[in-house]
Length: 440
Image (cartoon, rainbow, N blue to C red):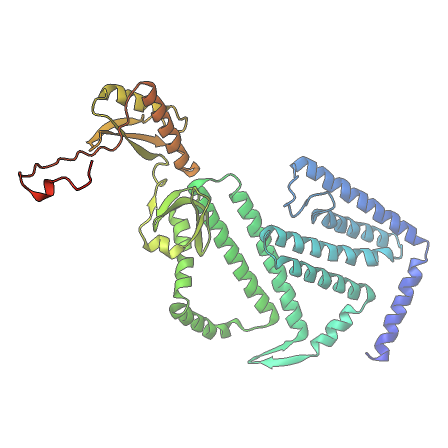
């Protein structure tokens, strides 16, 4: 760096250090303390008034000073106090440091909180959070020391030509920061909309709202990328060739992946399957717990989860047990001896089915003499339930136990398997009829 540039900078630093020794510093410190107190009171009052106790809140966080609203309020009050001090002719020293620090703190808080809310379980969020912190504090140091304009000027001198555009390191950095800020804003808006949409939605309404939230997030992030590339100076018309190549790649190599994404939006838009529905596909039955853009998660009553590509849900036969009516019909078969009282058995089986609170009273359980079995009379007990997501094996077990207890209490016999053997007589003199030697 040239000596002519160093001298004014050193002179400014010297004046700034002398200002810290002036008596007006106490006035600045007092004004800053008043701003901190007012910001704390403002955020605390809003937190109590709005009932914000959720740690996922970007503005409020877990504590009063933990969210993005506290540094934002303090920054606004700091600018007001700075303006009033300048109007009174007070030389500034503390606020020359406080304002850049608050700006950096606001950028860090917003970036970190938005990423934590948008991607709560992602491992790659933490390195990005540290990167945002380092960039914000580095910019603050360059701003306070007065080196920021000089650094930007030097970076602007490093240029190269890309096609018909001339790029520099400064434009690349500014474009990356602009794209990052727009993407963070897009994630913030989409996360807030998704949280509000999904707050009290269930079933088909939940699926439709999730589709809207996903489409809005994708659209906002696409706009953010376009804005970032425009800020860098990339000619977007030159991307038409790249878009055609990507289209060809999707048409051949990525057709399955593209089909899954398109199928996901079709499922969410048509509401043919919704979160909470009980479905059966490819001999796997369970409850839909999540519908993503590429796949759907189905959880069986036994706890196993199946990740099903959305294209399979569109092109294959799917039994949706909850599409029109969440009620499901179940049955169990019981055999009794031929000597049993049919009317008594019918009444006992119906009462045993009604003994379970999960069995619906309307429609009521039905008992039918379904077959004349080889060992006894076969009765089929049919009943309706409205909560198949809670499993059916335990319910069948409870009803079978109640049936067994009722039949035993009334002396109704459950027959063992019976087989009758008929021995054909053999003619006299047949050697096979003679007793074996040594037989008793």
